[in-house]
Image 1: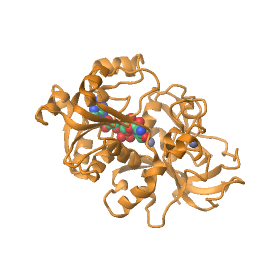
Image 2: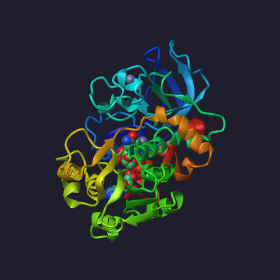
Image 3: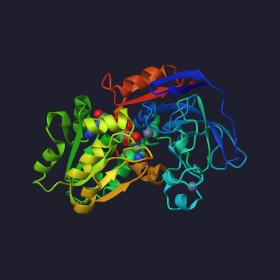
Image 4: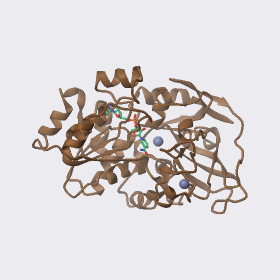
Length: 384
Ligand SMILES: NC(=O)c1ccc[n+]([C@@H]2O[C@H](COP(=O)([O-])OP(=O)(O)OC[C@H]3O[C@@H](n4cnc5c(N)ncnc54)[C@H](O)[C@@H]3O)[C@@H](O)[C@H]2O)c1
Ligand SMILES: [Zn+2]
Ligand SMILES: [Zn+2]
């Protein structure tokens, strides 16, 4: 089958790989109909995630048709069109029982932090992902959901990660009616976080990025204010001034380890790798939230140390909340938001690329060319 193949930092290509097989009676094999490239894949692509092995296939955002099921699978049948949450979750460990599906203890038993994630290096379990024609889906009775007939497949594929992650960013931020919410990052996740902030009653939503085309998009899509940090001397001072010097009630980090904006962080985090990526957006979030405020982090960082102003966290009495999104927990309510028209996920898709051109798609998305916001990959069988 055709599959994306990681060859090393900034080098991916499409190759022929063996068709995946059922390895456990609770597995299913899914024929992919759409997959996305995510900002999280860029951390892998840029070589920032430890134990990203050459030869692996990325892709944790995908939907597809069930081709084969293991002997124990009861909830799926061959031919079902399913959306598959990016978290691989067993459904029965103590963490899954608390609906912390991103922290499953069984799907990534070598780790004590994150659970299994499709196509996200051996630090997240070493599972191959869905930027391929076929993918093996473990615990098939737990994660996958049959796509309701009235849900567009383009909306469905964005419900596997981007929409739940943006929503959970706003949820973890504990937004109260009238709150001022600052979102760092106007990528797909930040755009959704800004959109969802209003659903929690925000009174003012401000997005910070440095890509004008994304700032333009989010202003319209999420009806918010949006500012370019390159046009200000100090984004923290700007945010303090615009909040009567109190600071924002909540700040959301939707950037993670690839952040730009600080030479020190970029050199130590992204070039020399003396820390787990650049923590610039998180730094700004901590320094621009008000005393007693909440910083919600969905931006992804590597599993070692980062330079963050922990003294300010203590002295300001900040609450930090963070996690991988718990997709399965959020799906029922998010599907209702999509049905009601409160969220239009597919509006963020800018590029539809044949799977065979995966290398170009990574380059365009990584270099932010051609006004790219969200690229989706379409395998040959889904194009007929
Ligand atoms: N926690 C989760 O469950 C989860 C799920 C999906 C994605 N993520 C993470 O969310 C983050 C965003 O994902 P995405 O797909 O939107 O990525 P993306 O790369 O498309 O967007 C990131 C945006 O941040 C902007 N940016 C860079 N430096 C900045 C700074 N200092 N301040 C403000 N903006 C800055 C970039 O210009 C870009 O527009 C990534 O770290 C990704 O790994 C987390
Ligand atoms: Zn993702
Ligand atoms: Zn579990």
